[in-house]
Length: 146
Image 1 (cartoon, helix red, strand yellow):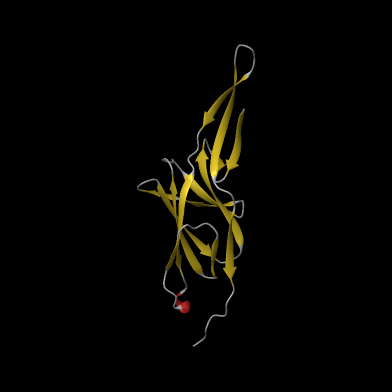
Image 2: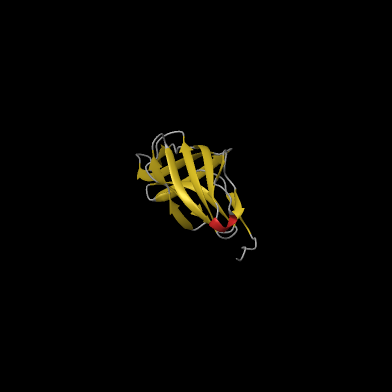
């Protein structure tokens, strides 16, 4: 039997993986897994062309707030290497994080509607939460017409 229990304390997540294996007294054997924590989040906003706004970098990042049609490029640094990580959007849809140098991971998030997301690692085919929920706010604005 496999179980994943997650405890978060001030952005530090510790995943505990328990594998039930018979011991002499019939007690399950507990193995622990130390999940890396998120050190930094940097967000680069790529605004829609019609807005004439230049790209903007926000560090530290987390919550995403921009006009509809913006693409947020997230760069996430962890305190130690990760095999695989994802963004969990609105508690179900996943966006893969791509690994780069120095324990950095990147993904692009379209800002089309309000919602939430969090960072998770994938350990033993299970999503293990690494952060609290961050908000996504898609600001509505009138698109100028020529």
